[in-house]
Length: 497
Image 1 (cartoon, rainbow, N blue to C red):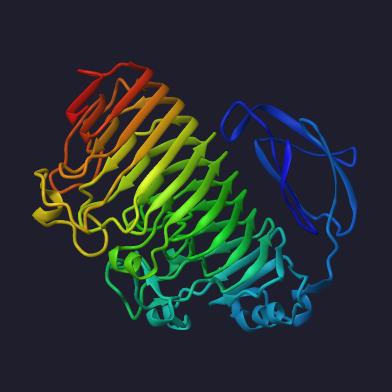
Image 2: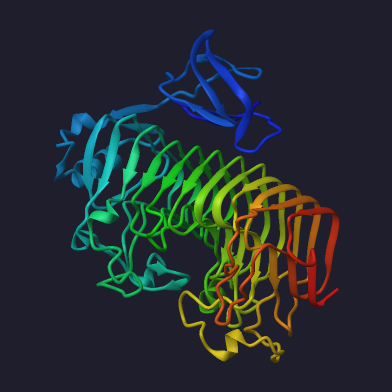
């Protein structure tokens, strides 16, 4: 086992395990020789440590460590907030954040704090203690607007006006927000989901938004009922998301979990997702944004997470024009999602950047309708998608608007209770997917499966218990791939080698 994050009041540990998200068996955790709890997850966090103190943790091994000093400790209670969930506490929390000196920690004690928007401060940590609840206002008129021209207003890959988020990082660095507290967006109690595809004053904000920020850690929080994507890092780097629980109503669209956007050097570990859209969606803007900033999303490690419910487990796009590359998804558990890997793109996304060098390894998927989907004909989202230019499978001239899909590697995976198809890979006739490789992957099918649609396109395929279906794939490689219960051919190739 190893420490993946240590600060003055918490430590996060990752075990080396042969099984995704959960350990093979329950284990005990001892802190300084005292049993503190039993645990099953591969990633866990211990809170309420004392700064500048020696500790020993024993779980499936022993680690000795010393917590860092805390230059300043500031308590929110000393700012006299209401903490009743009725009166607005925004000014009290913002005052406490700004008053905490560099190198200090702001401790938010138990209570319910009604807020609109909070703006964090560099080099200041926030400890959200157990039963501390940040409650977002349900009135959109309470929220300031982030204007598009300042590169802080963004919606689905384009610079537009949108509302501020509950917690905002703008040009911040060296910040950790952590603890067993929660951020409740209260979206279901407001009007955020009414005509959600229509802008009302401005586009919706998030529970946590960051832009142009560096070295940020978010650990342990329960984030739920969000207005849109729960956590949206944009143009940011060196980010860690550990042991989060992100939950949204399964019927509410555009309520993704974590959506890294034009961002790099990211770790997502030990997180649990149950959302109304995609669990993790990696993005890099639409064509105009990509042409302006030329910023890919890259070097992202997604490990030891549980994707339970959602449209897609780990998703790329559809706003992917700046490129997405060097992504590793490993030792994760997918349960009851519509798709496992899901790539959404189409003509018009362009080739400022490519989607390339994507690896999935050591994965278990249970009751995932279609474990793998790469769709170059996606017909939803911003700026259309229903035109013949998008949906035709005929070859069109290659130009700056033609998306490029590179290499995708899948290995050491077990996919149980597949219903629609093992994998559907749809490249463009003029720009096939470069490489799809499978090694040591097994598919077993749900014998009670119903016919369904594997991917969103204008003229969709309908499938039931299909194997691997490829259209316009330059090279398909398979080694030790098995199918139990497939109907028809295991591998179907159209314009594929």
